[in-house]
Length: 306
Picture (cartoon, rainbow, N blue to C red):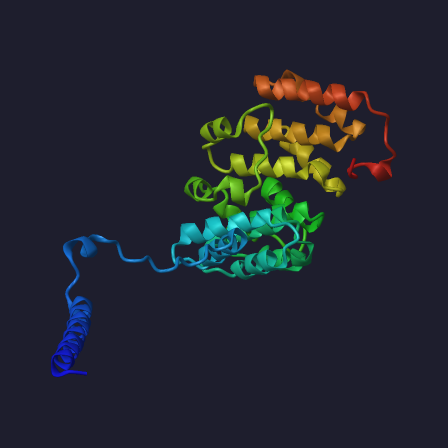
């Protein structure tokens, strides 16, 4: 190979090497260069979202947190909602625990919830709650015991209506006196505490409006609750209550007498047919008409459940 050819070959090889070197440097600069304006506008990739909490798990979390909430009203509402969970062991356990809550409205809600969920295994806890210092809690426990078909609940309502003690468990004198206090009654919360049943076609809201005189709302509710009390003295208490000075108590007593289906009671309430109050007079008429059409029962069956 002559000299000129060698020179051209070396020169060409150098050119190629130089081009390769320049290409490598250019690529490196691009990698190290700051992002362009267009590149900075691109949104960053979002992190992977946390999996959604399953509805059932969320529901239980809400109930558990609510039952332990520092806010008393919120705690009471959560505990009362547990009554919808019929046959659920965790809900029953939580309600039983709240029977010992420091706030009476929470204890009242717990007692009501246990009855609503038909927690028969909690009957002993509810009987213990009959000794609560707050009358509204006692009434809630009594109402729930009746829902559980535990007749000991009738004793409390008998005491409320008559002012007399029937058994070893129930309201004490101080609690009965508290039921005569208008302010105390207003604080009770009829829906959760007493298990109120409107009577004589009068709606609950109207009843609350007209029943602001002493203990009559509670005594009227107690009369209604004695409708199916199997004890004979319940019939005697209701007949006496049919002559009460407060027309709401008289009307409630007549409603309860009709539900007892004891025809022998018809002749004992005939004086109510001349009552000056329309609601009482009509209730008496319906009661007498109903009982008069029933066959006579034997003395041993008087006062028994229909």
